[in-house]
Length: 46
Image 1 (cartoon, one colour):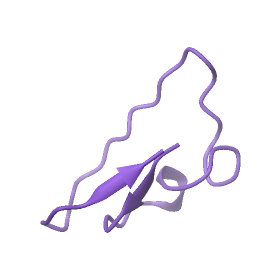
Image 2 (tube, rainbow, N blue to C red):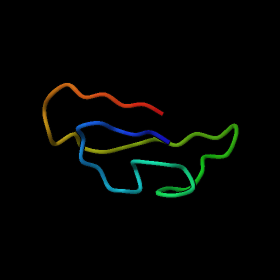
Image 3 (cartoon, rainbow, N blue to C red):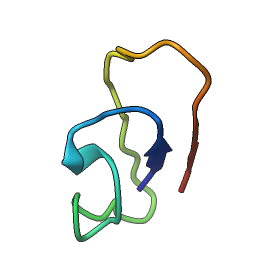
């Protein structure tokens, strides 16, 4: 999962796998798609 700093996203797109969103299985991918509504420089980590 990815934790975003400064971007306001639905809870299911931000947080801990298995808690706020399903776990991403080994060997699989998940694509985060959203419209960035706030201009600026932000960071994220997994």
